[in-house]
Length: 426
Image (cartoon, rainbow, N blue to C red; front, top):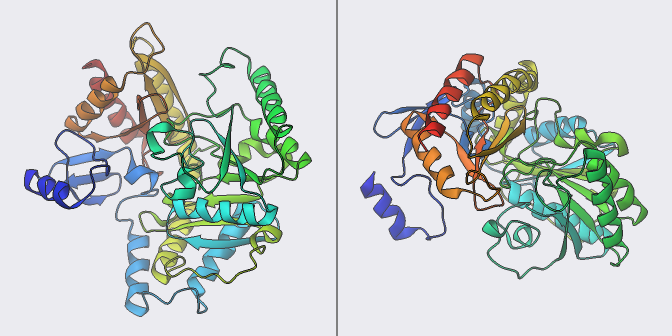
């Protein structure tokens, strides 16, 4: 691996992050497991950053990809594309947005970029509201609405972005309030901010912040926000790149925990729908989706091969009730982790929903982030045969756990046991 690591450093930029002191090369996977180049097997609790949503080497998806690749790999959106239309029909129906239109991209970054373009064009404004601690992608515009310093390398942006309270329940000036008081305070802050601006285009928000460490507001906060946004004509963009497709267990989309005021105007998705293939997209009301008055295409968005993968993957997910499995197995896993961490002084909080779980580490007796501990646990878990992620707006001190949605109870117990050993090694 040292030779490959040396070659990696020689031709790829320094800012391209790698996990582990000695990075590993993954060569193949099956189910919830992957193998490295040395033949070591790992239980995968991160799924390629929440992207291998169903399982590694899922036969239904690999078969669909192979069959489509044998017919036609590429055509672009300049031609009618049956798999793209079929997947769009299913996504539109599942979105909960009436009279929906769907545009496919190749990533979540590009999906959010498209949503921002649509919202600003529709409203004739470049003012965007975003949440503190948020992450929306790597492009110039997406970085411009990312409220997490660790993932925002420049302050330059084509957008004027204002950041709103509410994405993090247990930190910040409102943390000590009750859920109802927290929501009331955040709504008051939003209303005050809108009263001092002119013509905001949209609020973009992750129902559960992914890179930010799987933080979330009380249920209903974004519904309350939407009522205020409507008063000003502003749109709501729900970034479902990490929360979509049933991962949270309780809901198919994260926005459904905030459904009192109806669905979002625009919803972005990516990651899990392709089970590793490059699919992203935005779905929204026809009035907004059709607002562009210039020609546009997508060379690679809606590729026949990726659309075939998405159709097969979505069919498998729905027919096997993977949302229900995320709720059941995820509920067991989070309770198991809470029991493990209850007596560990450097664990501040175990939080999450379904198979989207965060374990925040701090220096004992304080609220100060402990990134060194998070890095040490990541390494120890790998040594024990478990792959997890990390993130968090406070110096990357949150362990991120997001296995494929087919995770079994036995695998959840195995992963929890490995993580317990890793946590106790600190």
